[in-house]
Image (cartoon, rainbow, N blue to C red; front, side):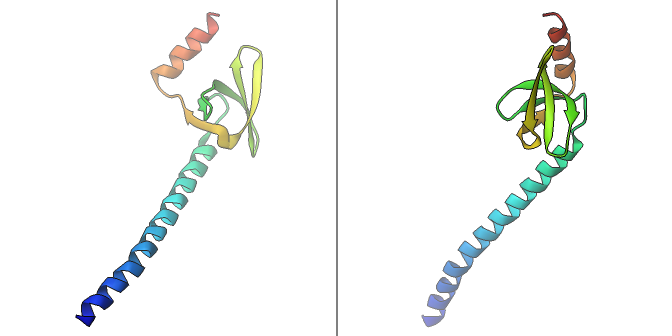
Length: 101
């Protein structure tokens, strides 16, 4: 009976450690993915910011991106605020709609 008690105590100690290890691994993977995404940004890409603003990158620095959100309207964002690229047919249709205003 003492052996079962020791096994249960060991499991109670190991389970939180495994959970913490998984959380750290997941956070590192997410950071690596975001760093790769940020490095892949190029001038001319259509992007959405994390706040939902759609724009075209017109200038990139090490830590900032300048987006043209309307003809003649340029906003400066931290590169980390770029949430996703607009790719495929959606990028072409937004470009066409923007020119018709």
